[in-house]
Length: 494
Figure 1 (cartoon, rainbow, N blue to C red):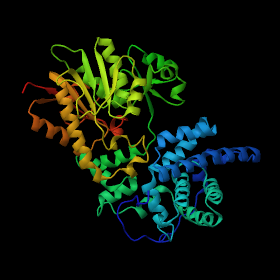
Figure 2 (figure 1 turned 90 degrees about the vertical axis):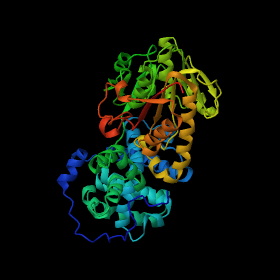
Figure 3 (figure 1 turned 60 degrees about the vertical axis):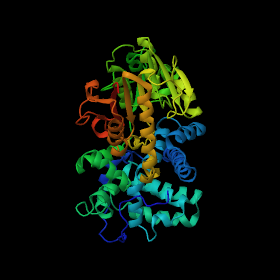
Figure 4 (figure 1 turned 180 degrees about the horizontal axis):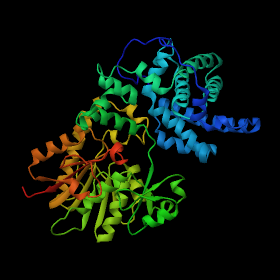
């Protein structure tokens, strides 16, 4: 994570270039009502110990992401489980870890303004601990004194005594202003550098801001809303696999019916694995847009047979699990393929009736035109799922796009070859990047000459705001889902 997260390279302003507003105790109390409680030393000591557990777990997550390229959404549950951190304490640890990762671009600019050393010059463990403290100060209800003292103690124990003094000085400077007061200081002027301004205030790399703005037609205000949505904690969405579970069963277990998907439900809190239907793989955690793009494929009418479906790149199995259940209900059969054995194993766990194979999707392991429906959930940059993978935005690089889009074209060609004339292909990416969506589809359709582009919105009557067509584009800030792209293509006779 050595690269600076913010907008443009520019001289840092001294931390004291503006008068520092005095903290208003009433405002602090409003931010955290617990500050008004009567002081109970025993309770405070216990609370501090719990929060130290949470901070240590969050710190260890940050270090693992930096040192081992760990996936935060996979590692954090294991850390909490191994340490016996549960309930509200687990929620605190998760918020501190994920929130810090999402906010790195903003926090590094603020740290730079409060220090005589650039963030990239700091020892990485010290930088991660200071970032953790900045997040507590600027985006949580944790009292200022607790955030500073606990972070300083964390640095003293985990990094060293000398660095703890540095952390104390920087965090006290950070605490002199709110986030809203810091942003105009550290972000580029929106008129002079609109992309840089959004990159810093929205905590995304510049190239991603540019890509998202382009996908939204250049609308700066909507781009800002999307970046803000990317920085929010996503709700947990469940899918009741039809014929195996019902939404009513999930609601009885504490969920709420979803807004769009007839098979979806939102879980406000709690562990999804504690729901029997999820534990038994009759239901699962699956983003609502992911459910809907799979459902849209099954809604397109096809003439003639409708017995054999293919999921070309099925791992880890979310869409395959729903397609398997829908196919079984119609008397059809799903073949699910993935190029990686461990991902194919996950697909096997998510399905009941499907055949699961391991093969290179670009080198067909089946006869041409064998399938009536084909799902291609193509490998992509994942820019549509940044809410769920908080570190991903800092790992992606635009230099990877040419190789990735070339693979997407080969896979879409393979999907089109696999479907019979009159059958339908769904091309899906969890990315709104134009190079991965409309450009890939447009190129393949023009070159082949045997694909008809259907209006995908027609098969998603539940949702509005999916764009001007013929494709469908979901958005976090409009729909509360991942930014999932869908193109529906019918194969014609050449």
